[in-house]
Image (cartoon, rainbow, N blue to C red; front, side, top):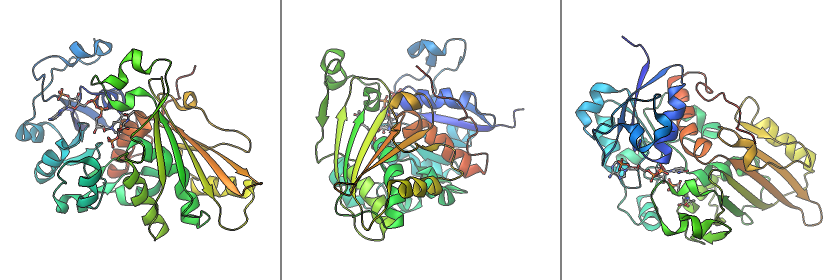
Length: 349
Ligand SMILES: NC(=O)C1=CN([C@@H]2O[C@H](COP(=O)(O)OP(=O)(O)OC[C@H]3O[C@@H](n4cnc5c(N)ncnc54)[C@H](OP(=O)(O)O)[C@@H]3O)[C@@H](O)[C@H]2O)C=CC1
Ligand SMILES: CC(=O)N[C@@H](CCC(=O)OP(=O)(O)O)C(=O)O
C-alpha cells in the first residue's frame, strides 16, 4: 500500500486543476487519488486534456463528500467562486485538509466579499479558520494549519513586491498605484468574449477598472502589515499571451533611501525564500523568465528626480499565482521541504 499523502482535486478539469495535476504528479510525497468534476464524472480526464494521455489514466469522480473522505487526505478546490463556500466546510468537518484557490475565503469581511464578488459570503466561522497562504509572508501561519485560502494571482505578484516596503515603513501608504497585466489563462478555460482569439490577438486592454475583486485583497494584506488602513489604485490589463502576470507598482518613499539600500532590504526580507528572486540594480524581470515555474522575480528602480519607487514583479499566474503556491502551502502545512515538487527551472524560450 502506498504511504504517500493522498490528494483530491475538485475543479480538476480547469486550468488551475490541470496545473495541480502536472505539479502533483511529480511531487515526491503526494499521490493524486481523485480527480473530480461536477459535470463529466465517469469520463477519463485525458479525454478533455489529451496531453495527459498515457500519463494519467484516471476517470473523473463526481462530488461525493464520503467518497472524497475515503480516498484522500487533502482536497484542493480549484472551482469558480461560490463553490468552496459550500464545499470547504463539509470537507473540513469530514477531517480533511483543504486548500482553496478561489477567492471565497480570502477576505475576512463578509460584507466586503459580497460587495466585490456579488455573491453571498461564506460562514464566518470558516472564514476565520482560513489562513491566507501568501507563502513567503505568512509561512508561520500556514505551517500546521488545516485550511489554506490561496491568494489570487494579481495579489501574489503585487504583494510580494510591496510587502517588504510596507513592513519596513518606507512606503507613503497613500501613494500606492498598481498597474498589472495578465495573460489570458488567468480567466480560466471557459469560453468568453474577451478570451476569444480574434478579440485578444493583436489587442491590449484594461478591464474591471477600479472594480477588480483583487483590490480589497491587496488592501487587506497591506493594511495588516502596515497596522493601518491602506487604500490603493489598482488597474488590470489583458495581454495577448497565455501565461504570465507583470505588476508594476509605483510608490512614494517616506524618508531618504538609496536604490542600493532598497534592493538590499528586499534581498534581506526574502533571504532563504528560494522562490523570490530580487534582481540586481538596473535589471528588471520579464514574464518569460518565470514561465512554467513557481518563481516570483522582482526588479526595483528609484527615480531620484521624483523620489518615487518603481517595483516590477512577475509570476506565472497558473503556477505561483495558483497551483504552484497551493503546493508550496501544502508543503508548509505538512512540514515538508517548501520546494518539494516545485524545484524546476522556468521554461525558456
Ligand atoms: N487561472 C488562473 O490563473 C487562476 C485562477 N484562480 C481561481 O481558481 C479557480 C479556478 O480557476 P480556473 O482553473 O482558471 O478556472 P476554469 O474555468 O479553467 O476551471 C474551473 C473548473 O471548475 C469546475 N466547476 C465549475 N462549476 C463547478 C461546481 N459547481 N462545482 C465544482 N466544480 C465546478 C469546472 O469543471 P467541471 O465542470 O468539470 O466540474 C471547471 O473546469 C477560480 O476560482 C479562479 O478564480 C486563482 C488564481 C489564478
Ligand atoms: C485574466 C483574468 O481574467 N484574470 C482573472 C483572475 C481571476 C483569479 O485568478 O482570481 P480569483 O480567484 O480571485 O478570481 C480576473 O481578472 O478576474
